[in-house]
Length: 194
Image (cartoon, rainbow, N blue to C red; front, side):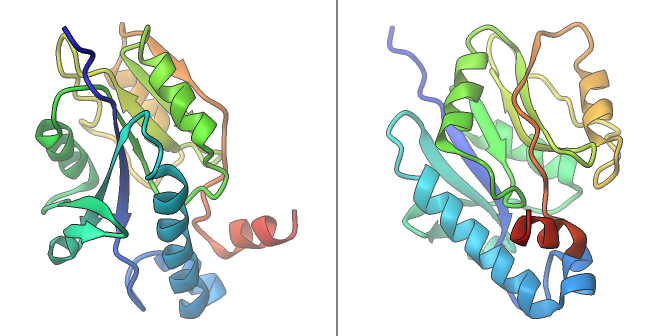
């Protein structure tokens, strides 16, 4: 029996002026927020999307942006909160382990994605913790059963990772390195001037 192909999903908002990255725009301006969004989506798609060890997908909002973007198959996120959209995505993907990343962490490397898929060889879930209490990566094995770690998660809060981990109590969980999410002007300034 052939091994199931792993899936990398870049979960993103299609960059548009004045939409998304509201905390970043409030402190750094609309132009900086738009440029950051646009750069990150293109950079991650270019660097990670061509790796043949996994199939790369974009899962985008607004839904009209789905189809093909940046040479990658794009799926619509659909309506609802973040947990509902992630749950829907995991049900729609073909069989195989799935790793989902956002577009807020410039430090994501190909080696991080490979490490996540390796971790899923022994773990039920894998996380890339963000310094703000959230996470820049979540991966789920999805076999022999599907897990639902998103119930009651306080998204965009310092409790997002802890809430998700609590939903996975009793499961084998692996952790990758911590990275910073660029969510506000202070984080962008640290990125520009480390």
